[in-house]
Amino acid sequence: MHLTKRSASLTPRSRHLLRHAALATGCALLFGILAALVQTGWHPLARLDHAWVDGLHRYARDHTATTAAVQTFSDIGGTITMRTLLGIAAAWLWLIGARVLACWVVAQTLVGWGAQWAFKLSFGRERPSFPNPVSHAGGPAFPSGHAMASAITCAVLVGLFWSQARRGGRIAAVAVAALTVLTIGWTRIALGVHWPSDVLGGWLAAGIVLGTVTVAVELWRPGALARDIRRVNWRTRPRVQRVLASPKDPSPAGPGPYDPEFGEAPDRPDGAIG
Image (cartoon, rainbow, N blue to C red; front, side, top):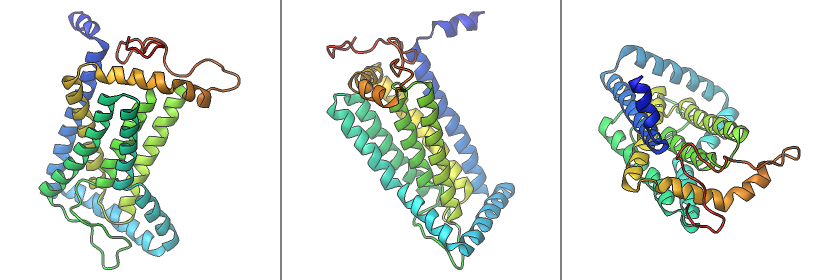
């Protein structure tokens, strides 16, 4: 009964903060366990890594057309592309006045890039090696930069889209983002430039960055992210409604006047912050 009352007394913003703190902590714990297993050469994990990579490499070597398509998709979904998308999103947010939200996107990009190389250089894991490789990549293997960058980018873009869409749009956005992240991770294994544990490590590292940056921004400017999200909604929701609304359902897209995520009312029509 006491715990129930305590959880009920938490504000929506506090729950938001706790969720991201839990995300960062949980991913950090799992990442630490995985890194320890990688560093110690835990036999079951090493056997799984080699089985996946060796089998996919044989297939890639024998199916050159498929391999070329996989390489193209991997290049398109590379770290430069993902960080460019975040840069465009940050510039747009800055231009419409959502400055803290723009800083949040930039921080996700820069912290993700810095954490990626800090982890890579700390562990110094070698990439898979073959007499006749079908692809090449430089730098240490663990964690996968492609996997990490794609997970951060897709999570950020879904987060920006979330409050403007109805349930169907949210499900579609999450499905597309998940498929993109999974496919990019798979291409790195299929091309023989990463072990499966590298890709898993990249996803966990992305969770650490996403949660940590969000908590840091919330503590730096309490409530500012919520206000900027309302500003984005006020600026873009009419356009999103026109795109997402079906002919049979003229009701507006997105949440109502109360957002349970942050417990805030939207901007007033005159652009003021409510």
